[in-house]
Each structure stands twice: as structure tokens, then as C-alpha cells.
Image 1 (cartoon, rainbow over the protein chains, first blue to last red):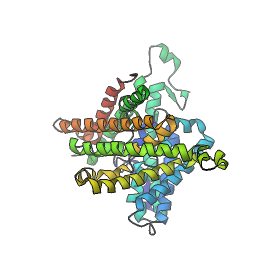
Image 2: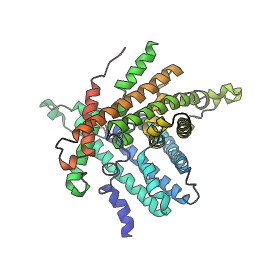
Image 3: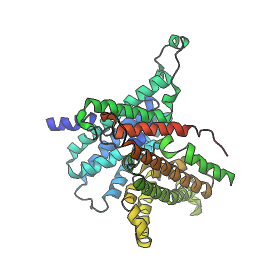
Image 4: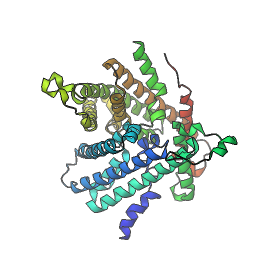
Length: 205
Length: 205
């Protein structure tokens, strides 16, 4: 039981997919200009990682070694198509906002990385937990970034105004750069900096 | 003609794959330690984009969009297969990468030994799938425009990775705080490069 708990807890900090394993940066940065798309994207990634981990783990003894990448890609794209259709049906606005980035979950290195590193050699239940854990680690960073960027970039959270009007009248202005792409990269850099100065053993030589 | 040049320039500088959309970040971060290897990967990406995006364009136009199958029979006028696009695009990319690899190995062993290790990596590079998905979303008019877009994005990606590799080679001699070393400083450099690229915004031929 303790081992299972570890599977979920470790990716949140010590083995975080974004800041430590450096997987899945591609799609994570573009969707974080606001909090809401960041949350939807996180949920989609958790679902895709967990489910494709289970399916691959069930099939792990029957997949031929040589063509495993293609088999994995097909399984993952099937899951992504399901998620994409569901998003289009229920939250069309956000699905438009996420545009190609839902499709790009297919080539998101987190999914492929976990399939290769974990699901191909473990039983379905632990693979499922591993998928959930890594999805949560990814979401944690994504939501933190969405929070910072929306709060300082537009003064709102989930579309509700947080910074009061009186502050704007006193001369406060939104930081327009926060919504621009470059700031996403710099914020990840700073998150990594903080994370590593708290866990000294993660520093690179 | 002017339209094509416009798309070409725009996709190199303004809609740069790395700085504006964060695509292909995983290999961008992992393989940018020396200029030489990053040059190899850059060339491979340009090459694969140049082939896969036009092929996917033709598939999208003649198979996937609504009513695209009319050339087969009049009965298919209402068939809309666009939900299959993810799975078909990724299959095309994986297959073409495999073919290109075998072809280069046969024709030019010296180029193969240069690109060799990078080619299989490219099948799961989000820049490649991303370019195909952007092509589908942006509705280009003809193959010429698509080729301009594909080669432009490839060259833009190469520009970014070679530039970053050159900076990283120099920064080895600088005094970077320990927790920021490696990954952290790379993100911040990329962010600053992206701010520099923002100055191209609004250029139009």
C-alpha cells in the first residue's frame, strides 16, 4: 500500500514530469495563459496517460518488440480522439481555445515516456496509478503557471476579477508580457530554480 | 507568388515553432548541447516536415474533410472523416520517417550516419505533428503554400535550436547559480530569445 501511495506522490515533486524528467514541455506552455484552459488540458492529459497506461499494460506481453512504438501511438491516438470528441461536445469554447494542443497530447513525451518506462513492464493496476500520478505532477505545474499568468496578466482568475478596480485607479497596470509566450518559458525556468534550490540533490553538475 | 513568400517568411520568424507555439521543446532542450548535433537534428526536422506536411495536406483534402471522397463516388458526398485525422496523420508521419530512414541509409550513408540517431526521434517530435495540425486548421489554398509553410517552420525550428546550442556552448564558462544550472537557465535563455523574436511581429511583405 505504501508503495502504491508513492507512485502517486513521487511525480508531484521528486520525479515531477516537467521540472525533473523534462517530459511534455511542448504542449504545457501554450495553454497556460489562462487558468481555465490549463485545468481542462490537465484533466485531458490525466485521462489519456492513465487509460493508455492501462491498455498498454494489458497488452504488454502481446506487443512485438520491433513495432511497439507504432502500436503505442495508435493506442494513444485512440484515447486522444475520444477526449477530443468529448471536449468538442461539452466545452466547445475551450476546445477551440486549446486548438491543436489536444491533438498534440499524442506526441506529448509524458505519455510515450510513461508507456515505455513503466507500463511496458508493470501490471495494469500499478500502471494506472503511475499514470494518475504523473498526470497530477504535470497538472500541478500547469495550474500553477496558469494561476500566475492569469492573475498578473489580466488580473482575473477563471474569468472573475480578483484585483479590485480601485487598485487600477491608483495606477496599477496589468503586466501584458505575462500573456505573451516568452513569459511562460521564463516562469518555468523560475519554478525549476525554486524547486531545485529546495531539493539540492536535483541540481545538475 | 507574393503570398507564398509571405507565408514562408512569416512561418520562420513570426509564427516560429519554438518561440510562438513551444513545439518540439523536448528534443529542443535535450539535443541542444553542441552546435554540431543540433545542426543535424535541425536538418532532419526540415527534411521530414518538407515531406510529411504536403502529404498530409493531400490526405486531408482528398480523404478527410467533409465531401472529400466525391472523387470516388457521388454517394460519399456527406461522409466526414475528419475525426480520424489524428490517427491518420501520426500513422503517415511514422511511416514516412521509417521510409526516409531506409532511403537515406541506401542512398547516402554519410548523411545517414549524421542524422541516424535523430530520425526515429522525429516521429514523436511534436513540431512535426503540430505542423500538420496547423496546416489543417489554417486552410491553405494550394500545395505551394503548404510547402512554403512546412519548409519555413522547419527552418525556423532549426534557427532556434542552433542559436540556443551556440549560447549554451558559451554559457558553460559563466557562473550560473547551482539550482539554475542546466535546465533552468536554458528555459530562461529561450524566454529571452523569444522576446527578441517578438520584435519581428507585424512584419509583412
